Image (cartoon, rainbow, N blue to C red; front, top):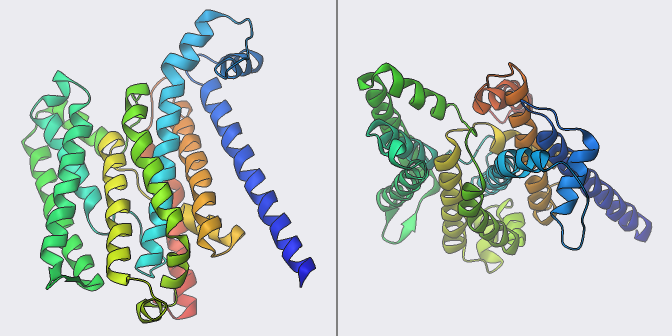
Length: 347
């Protein structure tokens, strides 16, 4: 028994070590490669010099390319990937649905519609931060509307919440399509590119916006990791074990939805991250949420950083929208999940 426990802990340490190394390698590659390929040694020198008490001599031009231009975008990709992945874990656990993702209750559609409004009415031309601001406001309003409609006498039914989210999401998607049809060619191109997910132009100002909400959501989810484990047994079992199911579920869903809305408002719609990363991590580390949540943060960050790297290099010097890259990998995996659950008789 004790040997099994030691073996299990050693395996988890190894997995986390691999995930951390994967994240560091992803970060290194994403900063090295672009329109200009920075030599490996110069990249390492510049990045290590960002740490306190470490100094190297390097070409100042490389510092401009790596730190001022690329690194902010890479960090945004990591934060968004982490946020979407950990939110996906929470959604799948709360709804006890393996195919749930962060956009399941419609908040992503609200964030996307807000961003489209900012582009359509020219607010994006005034300041680039108007797009994420409008996106977040609409995401928050969407979440508020969904809960207002789905809540009856202080209780929120999961089924009603899902159906309300689907209805509002469909309505907002229709509104978005309507705005696109009324747009001129230039605005239409901006909207379509943003809707497919875009990290172009993301920098340290966006990192400042995202860091606190993402870290806060991670802390909230980790604090409720044991509750998420119990949720998998069913709401009645969780209630019997002393968990305030309604309050805890609402807190987790609201937190996941808002951090998803914040991410979507900054980058546009990036699909499948919150679906495939939690499943892949669960396969290798198991269902315990304390490990699953942390590992999903690392896995989601690495996945989106690499997806962004591919989007920049695939047709260099042009870029492919990052949402296309994630869909290219995510859609086959989604079909795999459907077939897997079909064999089990779950769908």
